[in-house]
Length: 299
Image (cartoon, rainbow, N blue to C red):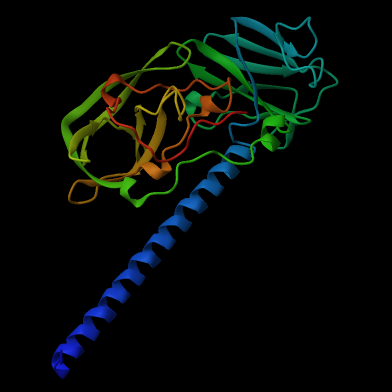
């Protein structure tokens, strides 16, 4: 068969266009894989850093009045055995928290040695961080009251975590979803792993279609992001039993949101028993297997 010069040129143009298109798709895929790989590496760095979840070593609820603390068994609050025997006392009077150190213990707050001070809890923003040797602690406020959250900067979990098991990165799990805002902010209820209830602000609803099925999620307002706590059919099998977390940017001008399930991550409670994580609200149980993002980690 003899082809005309025009036919051959069109064929060659089509071939070149196809090759270019395939190269562009391959390049985009490589860029996306690199993005997710970098995100996962930074995720481990955040977990391992001083403010990460891996160094949590204790959570102790305060009683009214004086709370002595340290590793000695005579204290009201007993810290781990590798800490000092006595650090001092935390005095609780209603919502007022005061710290006083023992005479021979140098506790630093913002690199300044303090012997006595009023303490700011995390309820009011950045809490007062008290440090001594390799340990640090601060006051948290939760439904059950005020507590000491303890960090051990040399905790074995830090070196033990080498990687987090994940599903293979798949662009099909980066989904453009429709955001429909509510007329007024709604309240949704979540329950923490400690059994306490939390009420959260929900600004709207997210709708998307996957494999010809419709789904919806209720996000929580969290500053400049949307925070989604969701459950799916992989929970307790390949992924953490109490669901996973996902963050997304606020809606664009067309009320679209990108949900990248390749960045679905384990809640802090998957890494430490000293976190008070919220579990997915009943509205966010997806009748599907989200085979993307982090799998369950064993430490």
